Amino acid sequence: MIRDDKEWKDQLTPEQYHVTRECGTEMPFSGKYHKCYDKGTYQCVCCGSDLFSSDTKFESGTGWPSFYAPIDEVNLKEKTDESLGVSRVEIICSNCDAHLGHVFPDGPNPTGMRYCVNSASLNLKRET
Image (cartoon, rainbow, N blue to C red; front, side):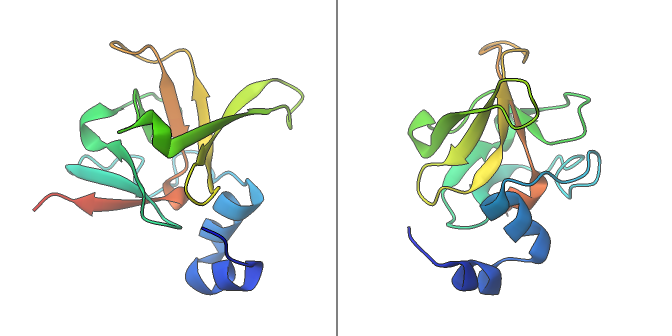
């Protein structure tokens, strides 16, 4: 999915644009999905790709929604991020290249992974 900056700015809020298109980060404990326990599918706010299920969401204490597994690993790309002087693994939507957050190897079983995601990069499609 290819769009120019104007198209992204027309579609997204300023915070969503900053997070997804400029690799920004929302303030911890401020995102709308941080304390959300509704059932459903978390989708990319830019393109609507299914990224995470509420069934894999857990409370990490970090201030951002956290998941121990994506719906399908093919929906995410990983990239080394050394922007803060430390090596981290950035997660990106494989369909539209939206920055989502980072993944760390300190999550719960069964995967041991923590996908730490900005609420601003997600849209929850609630179960009805």
